[in-house]
Image 1: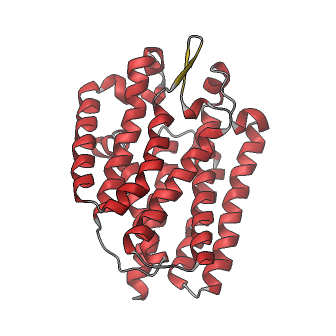
Image 2: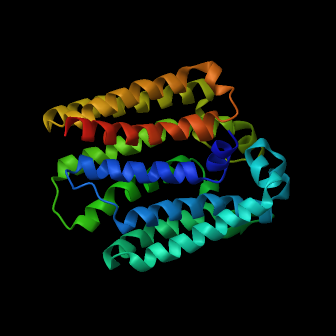
Image 3: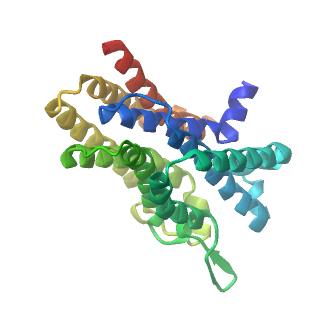
Length: 286
């Protein structure tokens, strides 16, 4: 149990989930399943970004460390610093191994991600990050995850893919990430209200925000069924149907929402589980 908590709290779990989604993309695109250098870039970049966000909070907002959200950082400062060092070292080594085209493709999203956590302006006594701009936070997260986990394999392969196929993959990924990210904003609704940060749950209300999450997941499933029926991809079709059903259960089962690791364990785990499903059925049907 201690190891599981460490993997989740150090952001290793979420970083592995990103890698699995990228491997999933390789299968969706019909590429050979391979451990390309960009997988290590994605892993360490995710690890660094999530720890960078915590580091900025640690340095600029000491009061936030008293919340349950930052409890692990408060109680394990040495492990936290160690995770930052590991992520920076690994990310640097992965960049050295990467193709130039991959680095160029990463640059815009790297800038976007950096300023998501790091202040770039001030408004009186308040610093402003991209995540502080009204309604922008959840769309940045969904876009960045979709961009990195889909377009990097496309760029690295140097193959021309069917535009409709690629567009549908991007839409599916965005809708799925959006559906499981919205509950994080719902969780933070009181803090965001105090900080005068306009998010969808604050504008729509908690109940409608949950409904929007279900709707997003439903559209993900509908598009996926259409997409992989037309393209005759049983591996991804079966995986996505199971993923959507289980994710809906995790989103709607109220008892689970009270668990301490509901967000960082269960909801983040839906991405991990989807990737595992695609890999499993890929090898099973092969």
